[in-house]
Amino acid sequence: MSAHTRAVLQALLVTALWSTSWVLIKIGLDDIPALTFAGLRYMLAFVCLLPLAWRGGHLSALRQASRATWQRLIALGLLLYTVTQGAQFLGLERLPAATVSLLFSFTTGVVALLSIPLLSERPTRGQWGGIVIYLLGALIYFYPVTFPRQQIEGLLIMLVGVLANAFSAVLGREVNRAATLPALAVTVSSMGIGATLLLGVGVVVQEVPALSIQNWVIVAWLALINTAFAFTLWNHTQRTLPAVETSIINNTMLIQIAVLAWIFLGETLSAREIGGLALAALGTLLVQLRRHL
Image (cartoon, rainbow, N blue to C red; front, side, top):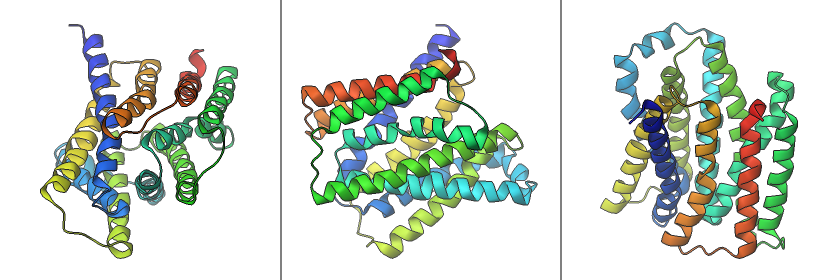
């Protein structure tokens, strides 16, 4: 088996794991408050990644980082983990998994728009076309636009989550483009900061229930396998796979999540909603392909 084929299979494994996260989160939310749940997941993942960062000498690099770099890392942790992940878990409390996945996928389009003033990276014609196709798919999926109150709350929460996710992507691009810190150092520091605040808010604002063995298994699996292991493996595949291939593979999650939610959560989709998801996936893919179109 070639290194390229092995990397493709590894990347497909990662997206499959990430897609199952949405199902596991929906199941865990029956017993665990959303913010506490998210905080536990990422705090445990941070604890698992910390020894890797220490053994690799990444913590010494963090100690030598400038004040401006630390300010960016703190902002990245708050946006990417505290706000984005908090919004994802709160959104999944109120909305179907396929809907949350669809809304989060629009992050790519928002990033393309934000990149113009913040990174001086102008989207291509293909990216603009992808944004339009995505919006058309989203309109088809949500038509007719009628939502109960709980879903309106979920949509507003997801709006905040998408914006935070997009700004964190731009900030993460700025931090990593500077290449002053190893990628693992950026991940561990930002995750530690964001997860600490997220768990703290969850403990203070929401009750902390007694977790069953099943609850702990779900939290542990999400933290150890779907976060610490999956993110590490994904970074490894990017040594071999071009950005275009990884973006195509990552884009399959939109459909994977819809199928898994149908199988395990009983979330049915009409032919119109399936068509909307397919169009949105195509639009997201066109945006991700960037200058390779």
